[in-house]
Length: 445
Image (cartoon, rainbow, N blue to C red; front, top):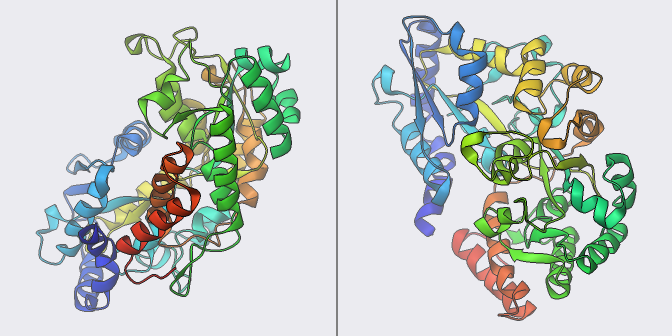
């Protein structure tokens, strides 16, 4: 684990000594901005690949080869591989250098305050006019300590509660999103419906971590203040709620991303709903509702189509993917056009929303889709985009830190044993602090 963290901090620590490389890399990039014949893009799955292929591939010059370097996220493999590649940029042949790499919200700050990410405005060439319609928080996340924007995204990730229509009808007598929202508009009401669902033989949520992001995204303090680990009251509230739900049988004791968790979404599943943003809805949940994946996304294939969306008891956001230009690239002009097309072009943003289900990072585009006849087949024909808009505009990421990914993983792991009754709450806290300090030796309790 310490080896992993050496890599996690490697970019930031070595950055101070990398001035010579960065200076040379930027000069080379400017001089050869249109000369690159290979565009190397580092990714961890095919989410961006699918959008690139559908909305940009036709614009790639005929003499340029696009090479997606895909490394799975599991076990920190993607970041480890990316760090290794970025550290080798100065010595790598031009056609082997990373040109674009993607980052997620939980570890974006690791790369923002380093010279390995290019300035979106000064180095790549996007203007304030180009960027004006993006949701502010998506830029705040990728802005370094000097106010420099280091990455852009095609998506914004406000989130809510994705619920099973047939279960809502059985428990509440309605599956109408407005009426279900009234029944779930605060945590006391949510708890009350959880009790009703239990009485009918259902689980309100699938497992321990389902609601974690709702609470962690509404904290008012960072995980670390100075070098001291700080646990926000919202995190403690998640622990209290999850223990109660586990003891009362309101959840199915599943861990997030597990087969058991998604089993509850099958046609014969008993889970009322899942918390998540648009990417979770279409990219994660929907495929797991299908009885026969070979038949595809067809209403009636498993529980596909038997779902709807509402805000739930508390607004929040979860995740997101940002496009970064890598220092040392010889494809600056192409990077600029990719960023313009996939994150700034209103018409493309509308198409991605309607065709791929993303809540895209362009407010006028999302207002257009919300007012249109767009229907999401997974959600029984619901146009859920309007629910997202006000939430996206109000998202505040001021409490993000470079420790978020590690803290999230460690607290979920440590408290799973407490929720299952294997250890006391005090022991779970001890286990959490021990694992975190092993991961981040510079921190204290």
